[in-house]
Length: 472
Image 1: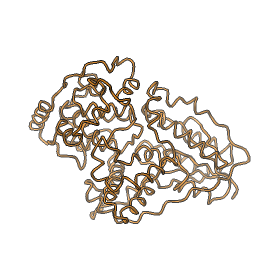
Image 2: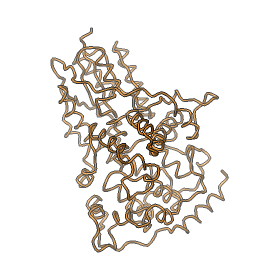
Image 3: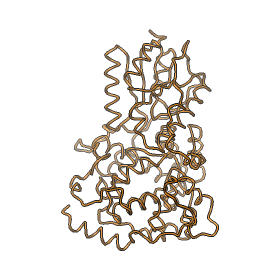
Image 4: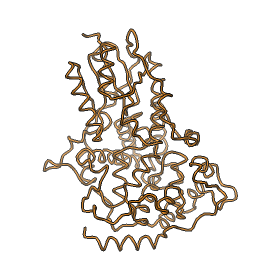
């Protein structure tokens, strides 16, 4: 049935260019019917990721309509919804881009089995990564547990050139019924925070490409040093778009290669950061416990606090620890939906080491608050900082947030931008924090800035004592 439609099941691939599943659907001939399904995995998303996903879905629908197509929205069990759509449309194939977290893999396996049992061609395609996790092996045939050898193994690999977007999409004679995005309420828990964060969102494929182009034109040359300065706009900002597939890693990779060929020294570091993302997925695929438990199982008996209701943990969540670097970074997250990478390391180290709190609490908090949340990168980042993960910072290394501030924010530009208390005329960004947070926190810019809940020296001493008493 050469003219039968193909269902294109969209997930974290909200784009039209460099989309192998879409390209293969077009190659089959016949209409293409893009579909997004709000299933249990979508409903389980944290507050900020769900809101950002809703924005991305709406934008994708607009892009599809510009091509003469549209996005069909349905809710329910993915396999059941797709089988219903097959019946409604006469589709003979379903295509989707591959996911790698264990819950998605389990779901996709069940979907493929259900479709094939009905005689429907079900195909998944690579594209969220540059290197499929099972294709990168050590000389002994195992998976890599340390980043540097992983980088060496893949840095010279050929990465296929990105695919162009189609000029138009063949539409069916009639479209299946669709639910309304607004009825899904994906942003309902953002409350007033949505208005604060929205100006910082760079939504959709065109914005992502613009971000990449601007970064390569004016920032990548200094990236290896500028990326560590939180007060500077020295990073690409592409984590937001990569997380939802509004841009692909291979589009970024080829842009980085061109910049390196042009002699822009920071391009090599940018390529390494792309491979760090690949490494996170490599580890998640081979050791799914990375997401939920200590990757180094000998840490299971470590005496971390696991009660998020403790006052010092609440202070950390609210950017009120009294430690300026920590609080500034947390407030940046509430206002922009993202956090500078140097800040992520500092707040994670402070929670897990100075406050002796389990990394899982911080990992879950980020999962609720970040618009660029990514399951693999988030978990690896937290376990790296805590010392419990693969390729981790040595467990006895405790970042001193005060000396880190002296090193990376000497003029306190970053701190002043995000902490209003104590300033006669706080900047807009610092004041926006109080508009973004829940009213129940009862905080204002006129509050006194707190003393540290745990000082850097005190926290380091406590952490090292715990390490010394633990048989690793």
